[in-house]
Length: 172
Image (cartoon, rainbow, N blue to C red):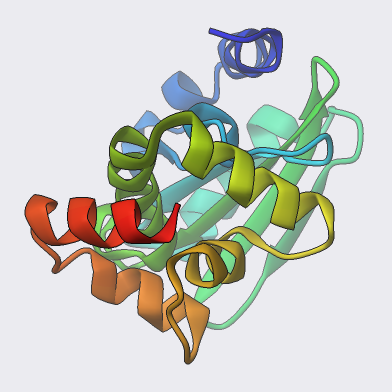
């Protein structure tokens, strides 16, 4: 585990976010934990709620005293953030079950790709991210996939391990 990952784990633990928001099924989906992070990467967490107001109240009660606290409710989701242990923690919540949310699904694909592609894949993605690309467009560029990168990464979840291995091997 690298020092950034250790620091992120410490921020998660110190904030107690996985415990305090346990009723909302929190899942960490940060690129830090799949080694596709940059210096600017934050800790991303997705949650699900039945009632948006209850989620907002729980989040405000737990984190409104933290540095850089904000809560932005929207019609179909809420986005909250705060700083802890030198990390920005960003929480996206909606009525959609966590495992069906795009960020969670993208994260699962990233874990598979990193496992298959190893350090060479990680290094290529990080280089592209350092030059300004977001993670999904970087993945698509490395893999030679065109079209909407966010939709394309979701399509990769349907690929078998063998299909991913062959494609990644041909691209790196």
